[in-house]
Figure 1 (cartoon, one colour):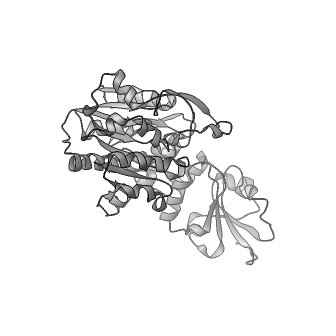
Figure 2 (tube, one colour):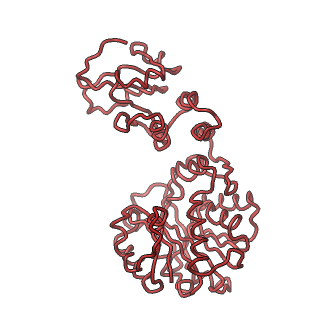
Figure 3 (tube, one colour):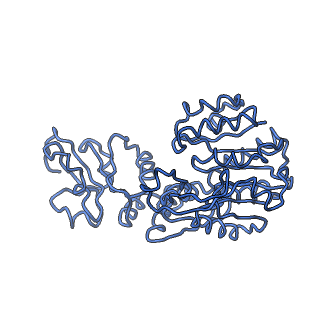
Length: 393
């Protein structure tokens, strides 16, 4: 190893086809850093013959480097987990780009058994490069997902279970505990904001087989995968609606998030001009849907709402369900994506129909006691980004 100036930050590179040090911010003064080595792969010698190449075993010797620089275009979350497993402290690495290419994956894969959890994740990365869709087999069913999806797809591939499977399990258990709803009962499961169907399909297939699914999904790309996943899982007793759910019929602009399609959301009028990949979607209210389909609101036993900050609009148009004494509601509560004033509107509506709620993050942390519905007004102070709530009559 060549002698270095230890007064400088000593940078170690995870090399890719393009040398990572070329992408270091211009604000970094070379007087204050030095690239001391590059982790060995096929491109390292070609691009950086004047910089030492080290083996992985040498990387675990922290004495000769200060900062690890990683090229990463999309999957930083998973790579961070790998680095954590290798006991590399968070303060010792940074990410420069937004993806991971095939050469990098091949490099990572040499360190993990193909049958291990991390090996499966890396195999998933390899499969998704250059593909539009992936098939994921889990304990909670078979699903076609987006290759670009870094959240739901990756989570299911890593855990080998349906996305949010533990929360769906608990929703059904809490419905039986607080509403007396037996799992063998017949009726309807409303999935509002169904995305590709991971919630309603898992619930129908494994928990409440006698329920008929009504799934609302406004994004056409998601809706197509929802239909495909119904077929894959042999679900025939369902209604799929390619519309947004709001308080009235109308039209909205919707922003599609390719890296997390489940986070696609209705945009406000002020956001329309700035939004990319914007698409128009039609809307209807739950009350309108019930009337048009001659459906008795009392037959709806479960309502799962995940609409990325649009929950107040959904609730305003679902008064007939809110009035039912035996309909269980499970709802995302997302301050980070909810427009100003709408969190209070959610609490206002819930206060009219419910006495208590359970914050699911608290519940899974061991605090299983219901809270007065009035505390919903202040829940954002403890959970400023997102949590989920189960509502109790």
